[in-house]
Image (cartoon, rainbow, N blue to C red):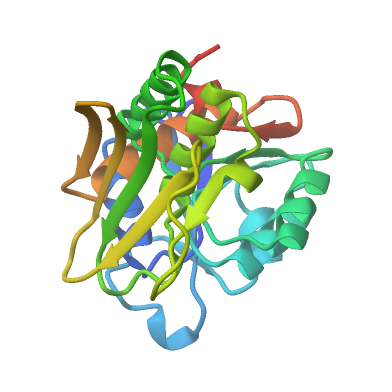
Length: 262
């Protein structure tokens, strides 16, 4: 039975991998109900859509009929959603934003609740906290390397999650991430600078996501790894964030806010 506290959800890109995972997870999720699905074209409307779902073809339509929209699409559409989100909430796991697009999200958060995370897995967010703590405890004699692997269809590299983990390491070391990050190039180059945070990215098969942060020190290595076996973990985390975001004051929030981390 629906109550006054039931959150009306919109799912952007509901025919995609994450959209389908969200629709499936929402069936048994407490306190929320999917009322609107965002699709790009009429011909997609019949693909695995639950009965009674209202379809929206624009950001404005999707936001207008929902309390909270969950979005795992593309930066351009995410910004469109944010601009229509005044007085409502947007939960986005989209990655690959340009500086200007990120700034647009931050501006929209003056009028809307926006929860932004590169990864809504509970385990990854615990990993983020562990990486920050390890970086704080281990000095720069320990080189930091972030390695990630995803399915062949993923476009951005390094992944948003890898960058999130790199930023956590920089936070722990109290260094500027923009100056510490190191993306490797082919061919001969200089030796690894002390204090750098290196990244490597691999693509292949149907890998949902594997992230490893290595602290390579004198005589020992410490490795922290998260392996995702199903997109359901991201869907459940995003639904938790949507319930949390409903009724909050406008602002730009992260998953650590949802989890109650300091």
